Image (cartoon, rainbow, N blue to C red):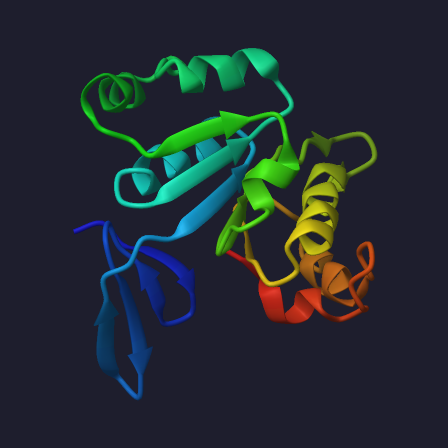
Length: 178
């Protein structure tokens, strides 16, 4: 059984959600619309696993990655990913258009690069912040799950920053790091 903890006490399984309330599990069988920002290793593996039982849209800035995913070829050399693309029925669409991916998503998983600069001791979180801004502008009701590596305090700063037309603090109820 594969479970991905998306929030404390909420687990997303292959075709169900388990929600723990007062230690009693409640299980729902559902199909979610999930958007994934970034088709690097983290984003792609999450997209492939979640697309087995959910509608998944993956957005990336690299047109060749998008084309390969839509052609059911892995842009990353990985035996398991290649096997999944070849032998599993995946509800997965890759796109260059954030609006297409985020417009009706229940969840948006952010898996964009946050390169670390050893000279300045700084993580470049601009790609994560850009996704948060796009999601809150396009679909402010979506829950944002950050899978990218971010420094301590970054999420606290993002929760209080206004993104687009969304009021400051709105992201605090919709943004979670994992």
